[in-house]
Length: 234
Image 1 (tube, helix red, strand yellow):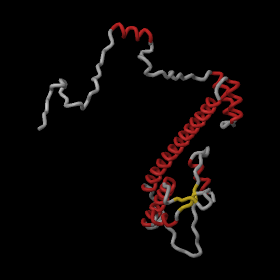
Image 2 (cartoon, rainbow, N blue to C red; image 1 turned 180 degrees about the horizontal axis):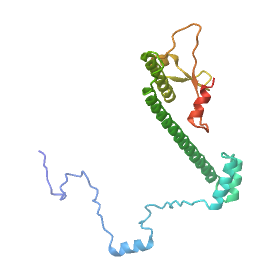
Image 3 (cartoon, one colour; image 1 turned 180 degrees about the vertical axis):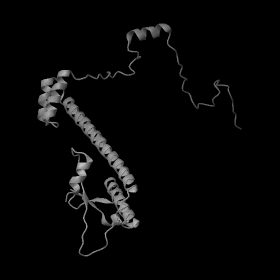
């Protein structure tokens, strides 16, 4: 026979000796204790919750910036010996000089890319505007004294417009139309992809005829009209 007793020796409602650990009691600080802790810790923390010192960010002085700017103009990527010598002269750590030059190079690179992108975008807009103007001029062109059939004039207009569209598309497209050459220095056209992209203007197969095309991207100091004249002067 099993004799079972409930609640006689365990007024908390447990059974047997399942959890003999005493319960934790949470006591709130009195108002006097809180005032004492605030007076001893004016930063607002209590106890040793965060003993780590706060990081302080110091800006470079105007003299330090001027000296580093002067060296950057002569040598954007100084050697460790130069950085160490400059840091000693300016009262900085070598890693501070290193980070300043690294940030300066990244900033200059970003500014140069933005400038080049702006120039390319402006040239692209000019080419589009010229394309629309030439389209309108060719569409309204008339020659009553030419005497030739109208179909020839329409054919010429169609060829010119197709050539302009091809030039713009080839300038904007990348792979797979363009691929890197074996030497890795130039970009050449993929002839198979060119035939699929422009089937109407693709050259007919000929054993005695070889077609090659390459391209290069650069920023030149001239307007688009002069550049086109130079490229057409062959």
